[in-house]
Amino acid sequence: MKTNNTFNRVGAGTPNQDDPTSTVQDQGQAEFSNVPRGTNQTQSHTDKPKQTPWIDFARRQANREMSTDAVLDLLRTETPGFYELAEVVGKWIWIGFSEKQPPEVTRVLSQLGFHWNNKRQVWQHPCGHITQGSQEDPHTKYSSYYAADTVAA
Image 1 (tube, rainbow, N blue to C red):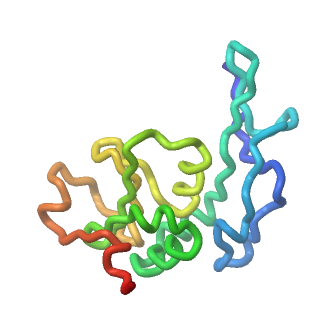
Image 2: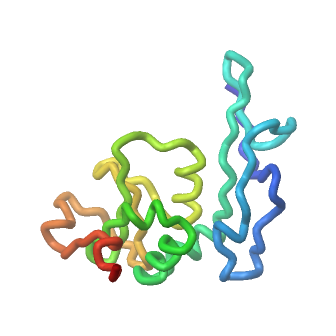
């Protein structure tokens, strides 16, 4: 399998990296069809190109340092579907799915600052509180709630 490890975005221009308030929605939606040669794709034995989703790692790092409330506000305004699934565990935010998600969903979660926790099978956002992993379930140590349950009707 031949891999090209450059992170190019096809379609909607580039994000505004000089603007720290630039969000995923401001950056537009990436297009993953009709990828020209030399972009972020891999070739399989069937010669069908696979697109590697584009991620702005500087923006991702900035998002990982946001507070819990700021991340919840971002989820509520930019990705309401993710907000509905967001569980606050201590000061972290977890998002879980019953099935594997398509690359565009994982790209957006990663861009927002989430990382996949294989042990717990959830996407987690540290909300500026990066800590060492724990063998025990954080639910036993910290309070938890679903963010959407706390919004007044």
